[in-house]
Amino acid sequence: MAKYVEIGKELKAQIMKGTYSSDVPLPDQVSLAKIFKTSRVTIQKALGLLINEGLIYSKQGSGTYVKQNINLLSRFDATVDQYVGTTELMHGHLVTSKVLAYNVRLPNAKEREDLNLAVADAVYDFVRLRIVDDSPWKIEHSIMPVKVVPGLNEDVLARSIYRYMRETLGETIGAAYRIIRAAQPNSYDRRYLDAVSETPMLEVEQIVSLADGTPFEYSFTRNRYDKGSIVVYHPERPML
Amino acid sequence: MAKYVEIGKELKAQIMKGTYSSDVPLPDQVSLAKIFKTSRVTIQKALGLLINEGLIYSKQGSGTYVKQNINLLSRFDATVDQYVGTTELMHGHLVTSKVLAYNVRLPNAKEREDLNLAVADAVYDFVRLRIVDDSPWKIEHSIMPVKVVPGLNEDVLARSIYRYMRETLGETIGAAYRIIRAAQPNSYDRRYLDAVSETPMLEVEQIVSLADGTPFEYSFTRNRYDKGSIVVYHPERPML
DNA sequence: CAGTGGTCTAGACCACTCA
DNA sequence: GAGTGGTCTAGACCACTGG
Image (cartoon, rainbow over all chains, first blue to last red; front, side):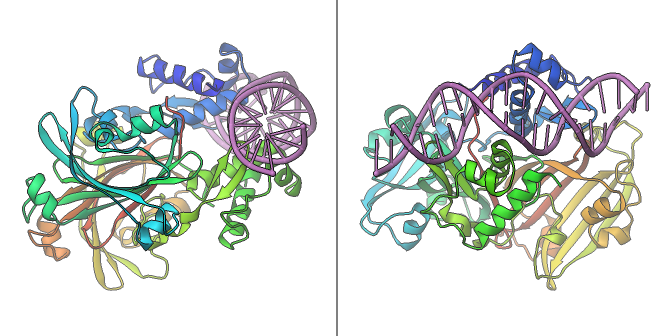
């Protein structure tokens, strides 16, 4: 593990423990470099991780401070901010899956473009109902290329796909595009999620890629408006 | 302007011009350092900007490549990914505002916490209907502290608050928390956005801060499900 | 003014890919 | 094995904050 990641973890742990308040700044970068026996650049890279998470912010000429509103995230139920599958998201809750449809077929034009596939590259096409503590939660409709995620059978689907990819295939999940929208309920929503005409649905369309840039998942996830929201943090970035 | 930002802009411009395809990698970092007469670390910082925007990705031992799905973003109408106000978002479209409510009052407990205010710190509380090309688009309900954004009158509200902050107050917008959810239409939605019972609404609740960490906006923005979605890109980051 | 973060350099070693 | 990106160093200068 890279040194700056280790330092980032340690600093985060200290912040979560309440070592630094939002009034008193963290030790300055030179001091931190001495404390962790490293260079200032490495400290800056470590602090950058926490800044990107929204945990701290830096003010030139002044210092580095802990943000006040860390608690904001915990107030909301479903956070889809990381690339962990939903199975691993709900700490302390049992998440199970029911496979509603499972099929292997050839991709259409849009899927070929979004997943970067040739005409003959088969894809899995499956729909899963995700259940938390015996209560229906969301419906996931996923398209995945067979050549990128081989061996994806119904047994794996009932468990965690992301864990299968990490532990069995040894793949690292990379970036994700997400489009978030509200939608009217469709027949699946009505049948499995107790939605009626007046029930707004929250839909997330996403393309997820491996660390090497290969797209491996194109999916639509839907839940009732009262069964989850999405939390996003946007740090400041130079405009290009 | 920092050198790495300049280089990032130049590289982005070249990529947008189609200089590099997704098959052939960009020049390697050492070559780029020579081309831009700088060090490799600076090149890496510049490339990092493009990686965070989802424009390119790097593969250790291989090279740095342009992503295939750059066009994904342009397919969707409303992108709320940057900290520009909506006035500046719709290129080539006329965005106007109608102030539906405007008030100065004392903050409640939640607002005091989210905006980091004392009991006596007054806040603006206003509702604006945003109109694109004569068609109602979204409703923004905003709370802003008077002491952070002084001089916010109805004249400014009808124009661009963000531009006022940048150009008149000289403030730099920093980070933002956003919670995105689907919701049932309320009376405002029905009255001004042509919503009925079966019209799902997309709602964005957000806290926006200045570069120095001071929160200055707590707002709810709503639009009809068919009048805008939200696009988010999540680059890979080490887990802390 | 002293102290802080922001940027930048030149060079080094390592991990990984791919022919 | 050559070439690539990932990390790290030690030191420097600048920009900004705040007493």
